[in-house]
Length: 270
Image (cartoon, rainbow, N blue to C red; front, side, top):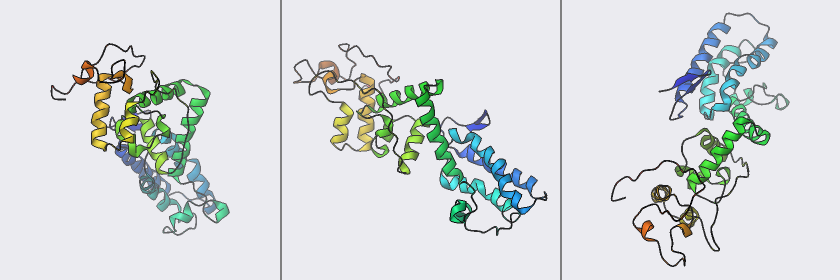
């Protein structure tokens, strides 16, 4: 169940449904208070930008609502202000959200504003090494260990490794940016290889075109064994698997420098 935290509706599953409903209700309340007011038509749109949109922008750094959600949220605002601005209420929304130089009304689309704020948080805090940036960097490294590939999270393909990553703000931003064709490259320490010709296990599985369900199980096994590379499962000569790996038991031969996520064995057959 979602809870209100610093003005934003947050839920463990991060579905965004509660936030969408809360913003929709705010839009209706704003419109109800606005309708009786008497304003000059050329004051209406600046008022919308200075009040309603600022209310929406406050929570955008934490939101990953879709474009259709934002259109739904904006509907009460537009129904209230367009006719007061001397514009037909059914005016094409493409023109409503278009810039003034293209003969639009110059109202920023909230979905575009959201993407801008997400990118701003991601780039600004990581570059400035703020406390939030340190948390984001730790989250990036955690996701890379979780997915087990040779690429940082934001350079991976969500269709390949999205199923392997935990549900976090960073994952949702990654998927949203990928859907828009936006590529962000942020360097992150790679997972270590231990010898010549060593390879990361998840890279091997992905190159072998393992299907998503099997990939998820293989990654769970890898995390349970706390291994990242092929050499951690094999004997010193690299010719065979160790007894511990065949038995599905973590090996004590490698001292890991990673803080692994907590994983337990599902049962004797796993």
